Image 1 (cartoon, rainbow, N blue to C red):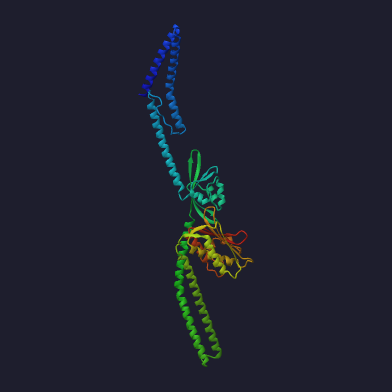
Image 2: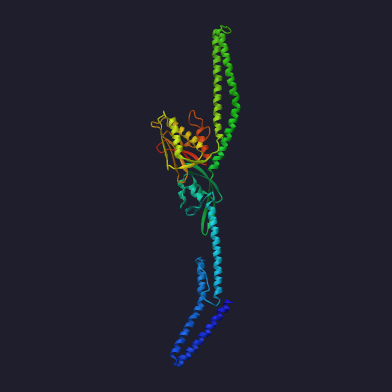
Length: 463
């Protein structure tokens, strides 16, 4: 229909043009009507231009349509600016097509936005690495894990320490590897899986990194609690009758010694004097031995009761806790306890308004243990000094540090000192640091130990 209307319009214009040209030729040959000839010539030019414009209209509209597709500019509209000749229908078809493209583009953008939001909120850190070493973080979990908003080269991961970079470099598609990194001074393990994707001619490796340290800590803690619970039960079951019998034996031996002493005082001659002295000495030795058994049994029972605290730690009751108030309370308590020890305690909170969501009772208990350990560590120092500080890490985590200028902790013992029953003190129980670690795990955090710059130990609590 459009074609026939176009042809009809073109044919009408051709007929009119030829008629005008015929009249113009006639007027020119007669050369009698100059003004009329000029008007007819002007009309012929106008008709020729109108015919050219008619032919060009389709090309112009088609060019605009193709340009809008080329530049993905689907906001253009194609209105019938020229009446007749079917261009109104052509413009309507063009508008429908661009509208369809616009709808497809809108749906594609919505789908891309949905996937971007989905990737951004995935709790697993996502990282892409190109063949030439370029790298980028894909979501907020990756930025939070690495403590930076973005990276550009995979070599930047070496700043995290551990073996993450080497694991990424040797990982093969489909593999799952356990990698280690250091976050705020604490060692953490990541489960790393990789897949290979091809985007055009660019081959990328997509890494998913999941922090499993909390799960490992929880599993280890459950294992230790089960062990302590079983050992406590077995030891208590075995030692309770031993302690009871030892105390009974001590009482009976006391009675025998008293009766024997009374007999001797009354002048009884059951034994000779030498035999009596020897018998009394043996009774005393037996009593001392049984008393030692009884006292050691009591000590062992007390030791086991103390370890039961590791399996009965109450759940953390979280509340906003200001570090300035917490440290002021601890400083007053410890300075009173160290009044005769000449220990200098420095307290610092940056910024002073820093807070953390924590259980103040459990946190007090953990920090008191650390401060007491620090006091023991600086016992042989000329100028004993302990530092208690709090700050915000670059990852936005609250950090507490307890440092001293004592002998420090040997690096080989940095993991063992948090294990229940392990202690480096002669009369230590191995409870304090284990309890501090359990308190931090209850807060979803971690505790680590390192060397203080200048000498001494530095314990770091990361929330």
